[in-house]
Image 1: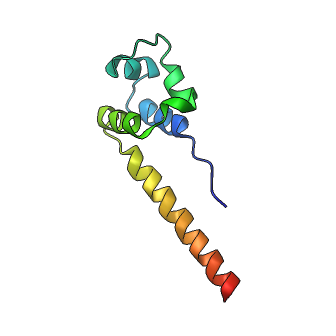
Image 2: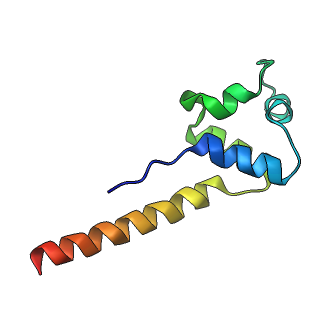
Length: 86
């Protein structure tokens, strides 16, 4: 079963680990939103280009995180398929 990935939570955790706020991130992204928490809570902001920009700004590869999750899911699915046809 595919797990739900909350990119906003991942970003929030990394921002906390580097002692930055969502408002800092919004400013760095030249984002006119005064409430930087929208970046974390609104799913529409979690596209690939956005993740690349956030990865560069936070020095954390969110795309690699997603690739790792994808690999785990694919491996899990492969094992389930093998068992079904075993």
